[in-house]
Image (cartoon, rainbow, N blue to C red; front, side):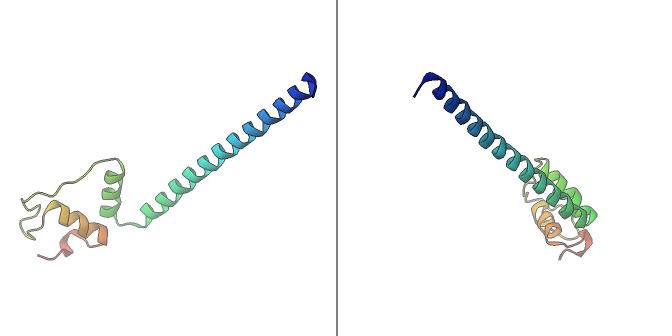
Length: 96
Protein backbone atom coordinates (compact mmCIF):
# COMPACT_ATOMS: atom_id res chain seq x y z
CA UNK A 1 0.00 0.00 0.00
CA UNK A 2 1.44 3.37 -0.93
CA UNK A 3 1.77 6.20 1.53
CA UNK A 4 -0.94 8.05 -0.38
CA UNK A 5 -3.40 5.17 0.15
CA UNK A 6 -2.34 4.85 3.81
CA UNK A 7 -3.04 8.52 4.48
CA UNK A 8 -6.50 8.07 2.91
CA UNK A 9 -7.19 5.16 5.25
CA UNK A 10 -5.91 7.14 8.23
CA UNK A 11 -8.15 10.03 7.27
CA UNK A 12 -11.13 7.68 6.95
CA UNK A 13 -10.38 6.08 10.35
CA UNK A 14 -10.16 9.52 11.95
CA UNK A 15 -13.51 10.49 10.43
CA UNK A 16 -15.11 7.28 11.67
CA UNK A 17 -13.73 7.82 15.18
CA UNK A 18 -14.84 11.47 15.13
CA UNK A 19 -18.33 10.41 14.00
CA UNK A 20 -18.51 7.83 16.80
CA UNK A 21 -17.42 10.38 19.43
CA UNK A 22 -19.91 12.92 18.10
CA UNK A 23 -22.69 10.30 18.22
CA UNK A 24 -21.87 9.44 21.83
CA UNK A 25 -21.87 13.12 22.79
CA UNK A 26 -25.21 13.78 21.09
CA UNK A 27 -26.83 10.74 22.68
CA UNK A 28 -25.47 11.75 26.10
CA UNK A 29 -26.76 15.32 25.79
CA UNK A 30 -30.17 14.11 24.59
CA UNK A 31 -30.35 11.69 27.52
CA UNK A 32 -29.53 14.45 30.00
CA UNK A 33 -32.13 16.75 28.46
CA UNK A 34 -34.74 13.98 28.56
CA UNK A 35 -34.01 13.29 32.24
CA UNK A 36 -34.24 16.99 33.02
CA UNK A 37 -37.59 17.24 31.20
CA UNK A 38 -38.91 14.20 33.08
CA UNK A 39 -37.78 15.68 36.39
CA UNK A 40 -39.51 18.99 35.60
CA UNK A 41 -42.73 17.14 34.75
CA UNK A 42 -42.53 15.16 37.99
CA UNK A 43 -41.94 18.36 39.99
CA UNK A 44 -44.95 20.03 38.40
CA UNK A 45 -47.16 17.17 39.64
CA UNK A 46 -46.05 17.45 43.26
CA UNK A 47 -47.75 19.50 45.92
CA UNK A 48 -46.11 22.75 46.93
CA UNK A 49 -44.46 21.27 50.02
CA UNK A 50 -43.22 18.23 48.14
CA UNK A 51 -41.85 20.41 45.36
CA UNK A 52 -39.90 22.55 47.82
CA UNK A 53 -38.55 19.44 49.50
CA UNK A 54 -37.60 17.81 46.20
CA UNK A 55 -35.84 20.98 45.07
CA UNK A 56 -33.92 21.18 48.34
CA UNK A 57 -32.89 17.54 48.08
CA UNK A 58 -31.92 18.01 44.44
CA UNK A 59 -29.76 20.98 45.43
CA UNK A 60 -27.83 18.74 47.78
CA UNK A 61 -29.40 19.82 51.05
CA UNK A 62 -29.72 16.74 53.20
CA UNK A 63 -31.92 16.37 56.21
CA UNK A 64 -30.85 14.46 59.28
CA UNK A 65 -32.87 12.66 61.88
CA UNK A 66 -32.71 14.19 65.31
CA UNK A 67 -34.15 12.89 68.56
CA UNK A 68 -35.81 16.30 69.07
CA UNK A 69 -39.28 16.35 67.54
CA UNK A 70 -39.77 18.80 64.69
CA UNK A 71 -43.34 19.43 65.71
CA UNK A 72 -44.38 19.18 69.34
CA UNK A 73 -48.01 18.50 68.31
CA UNK A 74 -47.20 15.40 66.28
CA UNK A 75 -44.04 14.30 68.07
CA UNK A 76 -42.44 13.44 64.73
CA UNK A 77 -38.78 14.00 63.93
CA UNK A 78 -37.51 15.93 60.92
CA UNK A 79 -36.77 12.73 59.01
CA UNK A 80 -40.22 11.28 59.73
CA UNK A 81 -41.95 14.43 58.54
CA UNK A 82 -39.83 14.48 55.38
CA UNK A 83 -40.68 10.83 54.73
CA UNK A 84 -44.38 11.62 55.28
CA UNK A 85 -44.18 14.49 52.79
CA UNK A 86 -42.48 12.26 50.23
CA UNK A 87 -45.30 9.74 50.63
CA UNK A 88 -47.83 12.49 49.94
CA UNK A 89 -49.09 13.41 53.41
CA UNK A 90 -49.83 17.05 54.11
CA UNK A 91 -47.94 18.52 57.10
CA UNK A 92 -51.04 18.49 59.32
CA UNK A 93 -52.12 15.00 58.23
CA UNK A 94 -49.18 13.11 59.76
CA UNK A 95 -50.09 10.72 62.56
CA UNK A 96 -49.33 11.84 66.08
